[in-house]
Image (tube, rainbow, N blue to C red; front, side, top):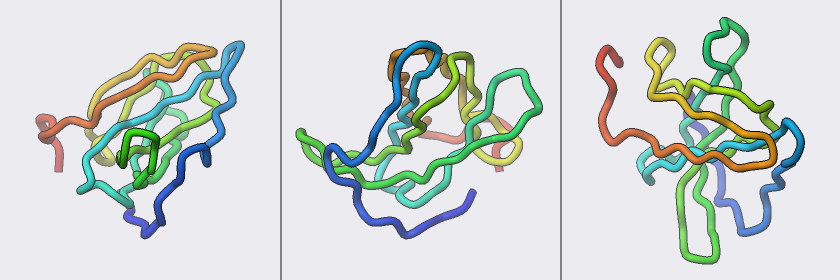
Length: 111
């Protein structure tokens, strides 16, 4: 996965388009993943993956580190640990925000 040097995101700077069959996903991580690109894809499909960088986000309750995926079609998604290994799966529902917590340790078979 790629690493990027992105500045922090301030409260209210991310816009999520929710409604109908469109939802969003937030992947919560630790500070150690700041700048890392995390890929997701529709589960059960060989289609394209999309990615988002983990950024430091200043929110009302403090600072968190997360990757945000706005405007996702409702359905089941695979979160990728690396190019070959899934970190887990998450269901995105239209009109809602799904949340996934990045695993604390690597899954079996990970690089």
